[in-house]
Length: 126
Image 1: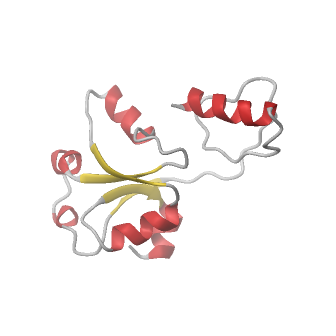
Image 2 (image 1 turned 60 degrees about the horizontal axis):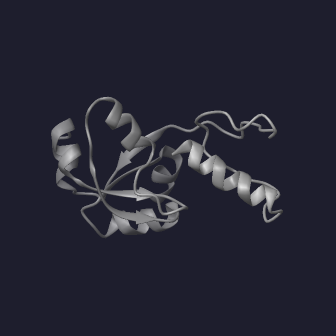
Image 3 (image 1 turned 30 degrees about the vertical axis):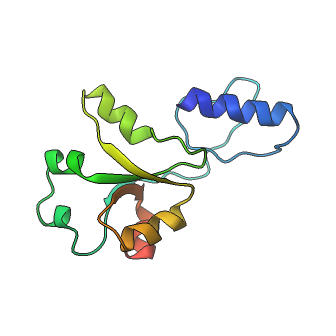
């Protein structure tokens, strides 16, 4: 996934349709790019108030839940999915949204769960 993201970004830079990109860190970018760390953030599992998973969170119930994934490129496989796959596990992504603001709105009105930046969840009060 990370290499695909960098490939897409490189293509946009080469076509001069992009001057700057803010991307999640994974593997370092190709050597021809200069990059700087802007911030570090931890992620949390978020859900609406009163969600059944919040009462008794366990790995098996987390994996069975319907998940929402934030992906600007519409990919239904994210960093969480890659980490789960390393452990031989998988989750079901039921909805992909293009940004965190939409994710917060969807969580508040559904039984979906999502892995989101902590500071957004705290501010959004999901």
